[in-house]
Length: 344
Image 1 (tube, rainbow, N blue to C red):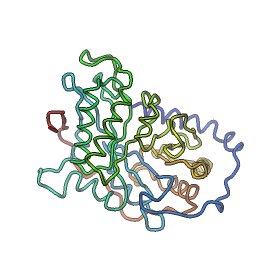
Image 2 (tube, one colour):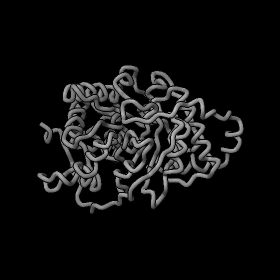
Image 3 (cartoon, rainbow, N blue to C red):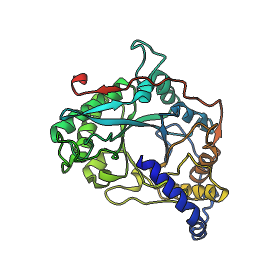
Image 4 (tube, helix red, strand yellow):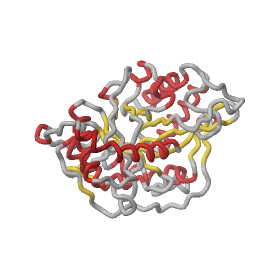
């Protein structure tokens, strides 16, 4: 995946340049930041972690606390896919995502999302489902107006069916132009999809605001002010511990994550200090979120040191871990294709 390739690139460049960059940045006075931590809705910036669920149990995000409250506000399941169903878009849940979301048997209330999603939500966190391209010539950037509405309805159905808190988009691997049933591109396609999805989510959940977010890559960089107005957050591209990118219009600090350290990495003391400084910078600049990519089970790659530095920098607080690691305790079977006809 491009995310993984970018991760390797930025991690390498960070090692080379971090000393010089860190020397040019002023230290942030931690005492100037008031300690705070609450359940989702009151804490700013929000803390979001992408979880590669092909091999990592998303329940691990619940282990991390600050002042007894969940530290990770948004757990993002990476990833489901947009696929082609003839000339229409469909939602594909691969074999692992199927196990995480769909109860088996259908009447079960102890498997699927009841086991892997609802405990996080009951603990105070939000759970999003990322939509990624799937090499089939269809993606967020080449949907006709009719297909924008259809795919928005499929996604709304999934949010309701699996008890999710919203949808995240990552415009990668769509292979635009390689499927004769879809145009190479459709101007305003992503904008239209966002508008339809916001209207659909608001209509289906009038008393529960559902989130719409995006990795700020490919066509996400072309979103209009109207689309951004309908969205909640965008996550910046780049994974080095010292990387920090401010938003460009129409994005604002309040809807932006300026940093996204790769959590599947063992950071040096210097790099951890960079994460702390950048997190304090995010807090002081009014950034809406701090994102992290590929958080693992701590017995495989421990994210606690980096999470602690986010907590120290952004909230002047202490992040702790309690409880045993949640292993991948499911056996992947078949995937699931969800079409527009299925949700009628």
